[in-house]
Length: 116
Image (tube, rainbow, N blue to C red):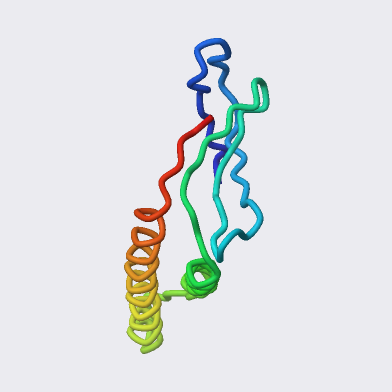
């Protein structure tokens, strides 16, 4: 995975840096996902997560791993079996992503905070 770079919005800084996403401590059942400019320490709030969304992400990661390990050989009867298995994994991933998105929207609509 390529390193994502961002530019600090602080006009006194405006430096480009590698994105280093962090998860804050649990507060009221939520964890803040954020990153900080390493040059001026400007805090950038991304969103809130909770144990449920983190668990869903773990499931998504596991299914993605299974998709990567699915070998589709274009010869013989295994092709259809492996293809169907891969499609099942992808369908489960999409359902989990939709579920996570709904939960995140609910959490984050109630918890607006401003960047400092």
